[in-house]
Image (cartoon, rainbow, N blue to C red; front, side, top):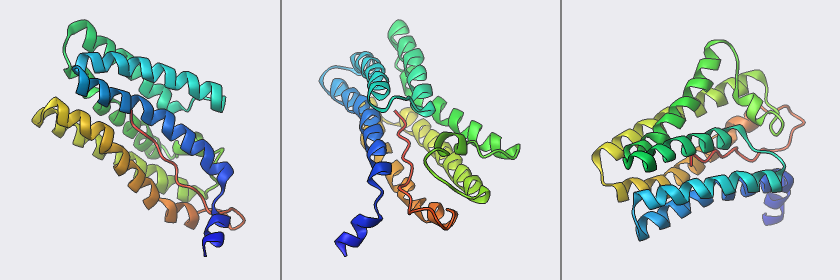
Length: 205
């Protein structure tokens, strides 16, 4: 049974996903540790540095930088810079709201014009029929909306430590669970000749 399960795993497909997930999770762990040992402003400075290093390593190891981590990195540098310059942690706290809303708007807005933009992000890895791309794009768009709403509720109503803890240890499990929930969709709409897919995992840093 184990050998059969291993045979169904496409390790060439899984390995880049694991590396990518580690590179995206790393800055979050740095952010959490720095906040626990110092404060949100020190943590923001370390977060910016770790994010820059993560993008550089992504290019060196994978020879490419995915569009979502790149956009997230730019937003981190902009809002992190504002946080440090103005000494106002509101900017770094609304960063997840901004990035998730941006991703949701792009994905859902594309669907309104008949374009499944997620295909341009994962189209070189996954082969799906058009209906499958549309449904996957819709699901991820709604998921990003949910993350934006959760972030707004948390930073406005709870302490900074709780917000940081959820950002690091809550968003990742939610994202992994959601990604796994899309496996049936990936396999349902994959061409008959395609192997079972590993779900795409997008970490919101």
